[in-house]
Image 1 (cartoon, rainbow, N blue to C red):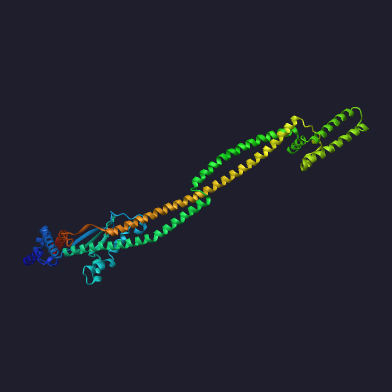
Image 2: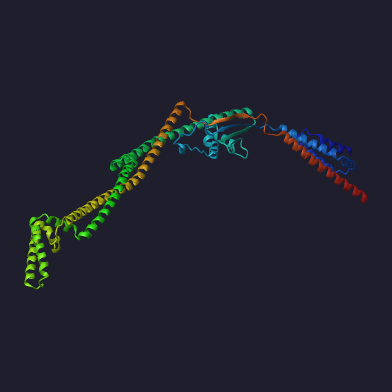
Length: 490
C-alpha cells in the first residue's frame, strides 16, 4: 500500500515528459485512487487535500510550460501604406477621371489579388507562384493579411512567419513592389488623363467657336453691340416720344373743343366755310349777292303792302330766284367740283361780314389743325408701338444672348482648366512626380513572438491543474465515504 501511494505521488511530481505525460500520469493516479482499497492511502489524501491540489497544479503547469517552450515561435511584421499623395491635388477638370473618391475596400482586395501578388512573387524569385500565393492568402489564418484601417485612407499589411529575417525581407520587397505598382497605375491614369484632354480640347474649342458665331450673327442681325446697350438706346427714344404723344393728345383735345364751339356758332362745316371764304373773294359773286340783298329788302317792304299772291310779290320772287340761280352758277364756276356738295341756298344768301369771315377762317384753320394733330398723334403712337415691340424683342434676345455668354464663359473656364491640367501632368511626367502611394510606417518585425504565448499557456495550465486537483480531492473524499459506510455495515 505504501509503494502504491509513493508511486502515485512520484507520478504527480514528475513533469519530464511534458504536458501529455503529465496528464497521463494524473489520470493514472486518479485511476489508482479510484481502485485502491488501501484505507491508509485514502485517509492520507483525505486529510491533506491542499497538498493534492498543489501537486496536481504543479504537474499540470510544468507539463504545459514544457509543451509551450517546445513549440517553434511565430513572429509578425507589418507596414502601413497611404493610398494617395496628400501633397498632390487632383488637376481641375479631371476630378471625374481621377476618381477622387477611391473605393478603399476594393483597392484592398486588389492588393491581395493574384493579379497583383503573383508578379510580385515572381520578382522575389518564387519558382511556384501559384503555390506561394495560395500559402500566403488562403486558409483560416493566412500568413499575409491586408486590411484598411477603419475610417482612414491607410492600408496595413501584416505577415507572419517563424523567421524574423524572412518577414523583414518579404515586407521590404512587398512594400517596394506596391510602390512600383502604384507608379504603374498612376502612369496609366496619367496617360488616360492626357488622352481625355486631347479628345476634350478640340470639342470644347469647337463649341466655344459655335457660340461666339451665334453671338456675332445676333449682333449683326439686330444691329447692336450688346442687348443692354440696345435696350438703353430704345428706352431713351421711347421716353420723349411718350411725352410728345401726351402733349399732342392734349393739344388735339383743346383744338377739338375750339372747333366744336366755332361749328356751333357758324353752323357750317369746314367745307362750307372754305366755300364761303372763296366766294367772298369773287367780285361777280359779291355783286350778285348785293343785288340779292337789295331784292330781299324790296321784298320785305312790298310784303307789307301786298299779298304773297299779288303780281308785285310774284315778280320780286321771280327776280330773287333768278339771282339765286346766277349765284349758284357763279359759285360753281368759282369753286369748280367742290361747289356741288358744299353750296346750298342758305350759303348762297349769306352776307360775308368781317366777323363771320374771321370765324369761318378760324373754323377752317382749326379743322386743319385737328387733322394735323391726329396725323401726328397716329405717327407718334405707331412709332411708340414699334419701339415697344423692339424692346420686347430685345428682352427675349437678351435672355438668349446671356445664355450664350454664360455657356461661352463656362466652356472657356473648362477649356482653361483642361489646359492647366495638361501642363501640370506634363510637368509631373517631366519631373517624375507621378504621385505614388506613400509608406507611412516602414516594415518592422515585432521582437516578441505572437505564438506561443507562454504566460497565457502557463496560466491556463495552472488553472487546469487546480480544476483536476479539486476533482481528485472530491473523488477521494467520495471513496473514503464509501469505505466508512461499508465498514459500518459490517
